[in-house]
Image (spheres, rainbow, N blue to C red):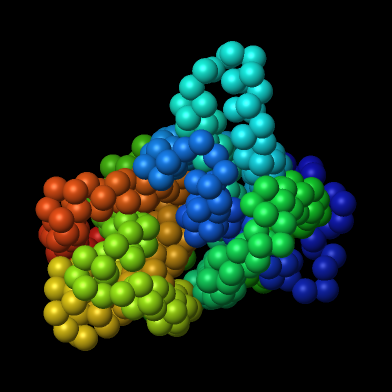
Length: 438
């Protein structure tokens, strides 16, 4: 895609390093993925239940099917990213996300049309199938492809400053994600849920896609630039190498211990956090705590996460990433053990808040900086995409496993105990999660 990198303008002629523009563009791309993220979908749940012929269990199952289907395709999408670059893939992701949001506004009309034409007599089943497809679309093109492309693009434009860039991107993205539910809820109140999704479809499918064509660039080399904005002399430094001596293929990466330790650690986190978030009111109610207490964990946990994320991103430029993984698993041990004893003491509540904050903050860091540091840039899409597919599937299974545990035992202790056991094992294994090149 080098021949198109200077169209409609040459990034090398910018008065400032174009990587900072890329950082802003990638952050915007992360924010545009919100309609496909869990917090972006959850705001619409009650309206969908009221207006569509589907019950809560079937809507949740449709979401599960769509998310798993998305996860299975992320590795392939990563390979397409490696082949065609950030601008092409972000254009496709934005355009298709807009179209899928537009499609979701017409699901009820499609159900009526098929019923009237006797194509499908069972409206509930038809709605379930159509919503499964819609959820797959916004999850794959939003939470999956657009997130991966925007994040990886920024990582390619920075080398020695990769952690700092990720920290800046993460802080702004975190603030945007935390504000998104309130903003989307206001859209729904003003425009109803169809109007809200239609507005998002136009903003993303036309506005953001146009922005992508103007500002997205795959890497600095194609633009006649170098990472970080200047050539850095080879000199001794205490910081670990920011890139390996050679680029790994996906097959080679999968044969390393570090790949699986980092991937499985993030997967168990995605499973546990998504399940806890999805059922948080019920989790607290099961131990005699009210809804306001349940919802109250998110603000302090988010503040901790933003602080942890920024500091860890900066520090990641100077230390081995396995130390961040060890701290990450410590956070998981705190939050899972706290869930088992939740309701017994104030300490358990704050362990849950603190553990979640540590985990949320470090999750963003590890998902971004690990793969270029360990395996290079050439196959970054395929490697990060394969890892992300495990995380997406984990996040899809979490709510279901939490629900299953509650149905079996009348509490969430079983899934908390299982998550704790896995977290303890991964904590000790993390001490051996060295960079494969070491």
